[in-house]
Length: 441
Ligand code: FAD
View 1 (cartoon, rainbow, N blue to C red):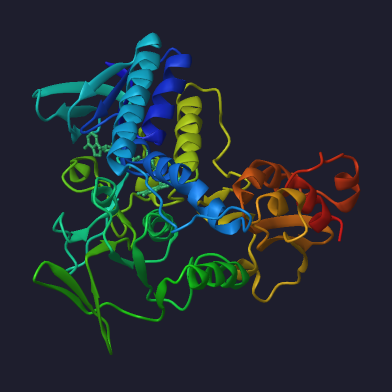
View 2 (tube, rainbow, N blue to C red):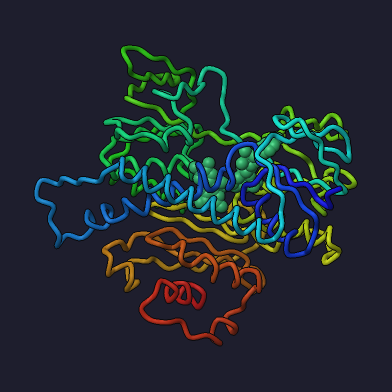
């Protein structure tokens, strides 16, 4: 009898297993595909590897003193793909070793609930009995009828990560973080990007001033931008993709569909444990419980679709099971970043959340920041949102602003006042100085 079985070894399940090991709980971790889940295999890690590898191209373009002659870059995509493969498998080995050190039993199989205390492993045809179960099955790419992936011309975000040939033209449907980050990578390698978004701006979950800054950059990079544009259908002719909008048809070599993700909750026996989903997601209470002894963490509960949120929830639930925690789960904030150029961060409240409420804003442009200047990438700004003279939100857009996210999170979580800001010396030259300037305006 396991104290806890964990279904899914993404950041949520893996972190839960690690914490369970530390708490000496008898634990089984079941993973159908690969250790590391979406994040390691087809998400956070490969996308950042691609962006990191191509970032010098962005910088070279912005530094007027370096000339590129005929402007020819030569990055070996096949070497990059090999590096991705090696990095992922090395990380998987490290995960497996760490879990073994903590005596976690790892099963490579699909877990399906038989009842409220037994999980069946499909391939091995064995049943594991448990006191507690954690569902950490994550999400998969959303497919909409008529826009199905074919793995060749119409690609999901996972499939496009395997592309060796850079398409001359790439249409991207969806301008959230995934569409923007992957678009940057292909754009840096020479693809002409056509970005199609149903709403009226890029990164529509961010504040409009952030979207405006991204918009300016995309225009500069000569992306073709289609906002308020709904895709009616996609057709293929002569190995080319045709994306049909209301009033026009866009033609491209390949098309990436990045319109969100849907929870992996089908065919895992939820009906056997009396758990009903809501739009596919598993509803949970304030303790992340889906029922008395069954928890749902990470993307699958739909609370926040971010790796660090999943990991934090995993750790919390294990501490609850091990009686090391008894408070409900209310994280103060969940920081988020978009990578590429410009980078975007936001933590705490956004202006979008504060409609009808009183708040103040202080904001500085990054143009005079010495680090941004040194790299010739001074576009963007840092914005601080205040309520009752306390910081309630920070967002920023620009070069490497992701480096500010943890400092910003601490400041928002602790609701700093200006007096608290003055207690600290911020090093020079750093991006942090501009955050201080924004805080003290
Ligand atoms: P997942 O990572 O999805 O893991 C779930 C695991 O469960 C999978 O391995 C799956 O195979 C397994 N599974 C499913 N069903 C079963 C079953 N029945 N039995 C056994 N195993 C099962 N987040 C960030 O915070 N930062 C980023 O920069 C970032 N970039 C991203 C880029 C892309 C392109 C994508 C797609 C996502 C990105 N994300 C990022 C989101 C991040 O990957 C997810 O939020 C995170 O992986 C969620 O973790 P999870 O543990 O909930 O689920």
